[in-house]
Length: 289
Figure 1 (cartoon, rainbow, N blue to C red):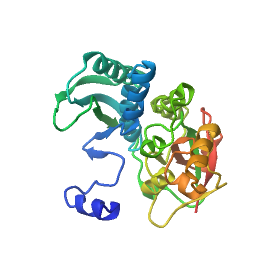
Figure 2: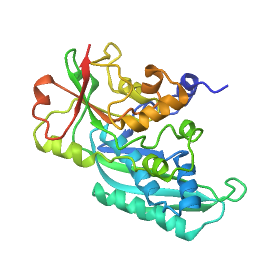
Figure 3: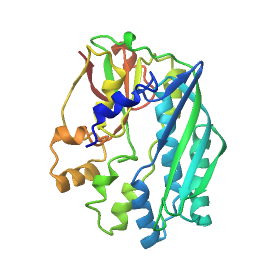
Figure 4: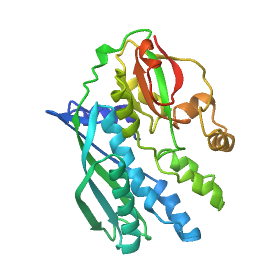
């Protein structure tokens, strides 16, 4: 049976950078990610409501570039991989347009990619898309800069982003308003972080809240430190959406926070005196202890 702990231990034999949000090579940071089973929900919306697939392309870019930010990088260029059983050109162009839109939002160059037809591996008109992004380091974010008493704040998400859809799809109905809200693209935080840096605010660490929810914050902290959260509510924004899935699943608050982003897409660690200088809206989450 699959064990995440054993999996990470095994693949760590092949790279000493496993476990971070992105990998480093010299002054370059690289990341690879995909959209997951949110694609299947987008295809339902396509089939029943003729909803374009462009938002999936934006998701693909967002999942990659938000990880690059967590390593102190500014995104520079992007490549995509699109695989289907048999290429449906209109759908591919819709996704590609979304990828281009996402790249333009963060001033990142789309320089190429791969389009594959994998009949026999992918079937039933489905497809998969993932992206590869490279950026340059502008801000080293060493863990040992984080100390007890540092503040932890969050930037709001746009919804579920691109995680948790294997669970979510078990409870959806053919409600166009609900499906449209679920398919809102993952927020890209490049401009937010750029504004923060331009304001002279010193960021100590960034955590992209994706699969496993707030457990992602542990990845950026020294082993002897943790976050004491100000309140252990289930969600910080988009209460109707997150309340809906909690009611449907019966999840505890703890399970919600370790599964979904709960309204927070990016977590920032910084000194308390830096918080008042933040030029963007944030939610105070807690402090380092």
